[in-house]
Image 1 (spheres, rainbow, N blue to C red):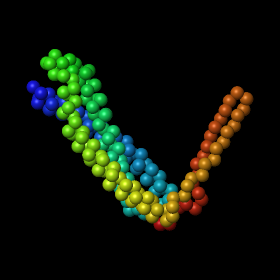
Image 2: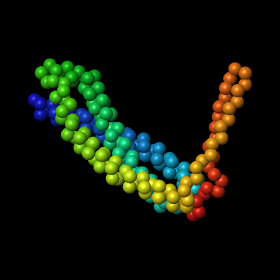
Image 3: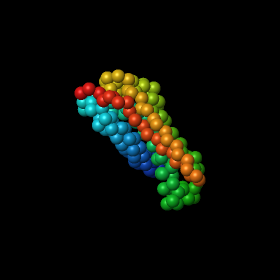
Image 4: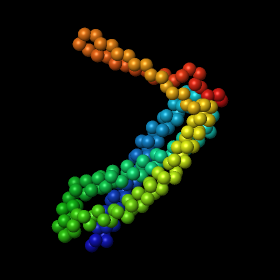
Length: 174
């Protein structure tokens, strides 16, 4: 009975882990892709430089995705099992609830090891390449944006606005 139950719990959680990893990867890639496209439109670098910068940030995105998908998978798998009264059936069969968690230690310990290796070696190297790639695009250190803040207070109200502007002439040569 425990081996069938172990396979069931693992299959359920790993299915949600794959869905969570795909979801978090898509969300983060959308953010980084939009930032990269904005830099392409603003600074007009060659496409290969933008692709190099985009590829350099991938280890950081992968690391966040691996870690975020673990609680996502466990919470969604166990909530589905609770909603379908599978926990009641498992408890009625005499299986302790803690025995459902132990099978998850091995795959998620492996995910933790991969994330630790990625965070210790690949992420710093990727961030160094990220900085180098954007330095090649700007041909200098990226110019810091300037901010202007506006506050207006008529009787009984407060309005606040701001504007962020990049330095003039910050376009990189083609």
